Length: 75
Ligand code: SF4
Image (cartoon, rainbow, N blue to C red):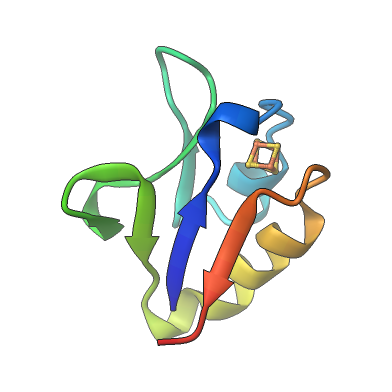
């Protein structure tokens, strides 16, 4: 599943990285959400590909994001 985060609109609420810490984390510099390094696409912290076993938790995190800035697309 392809995942993108509109990081500039992240409120650092922590919901996504608490819901799915295997895929999302807090960036230590700007405190916005980012994709953990091993799942990033071309090193971009705002885009990545989730393995199938993380589909459920990534989808849950996207659903729970209060500002709805995590987009998921089945690939
Ligand atoms: S749930 Fe949304 S607003 Fe909250 S930290 Fe994650 S991306 Fe940012």
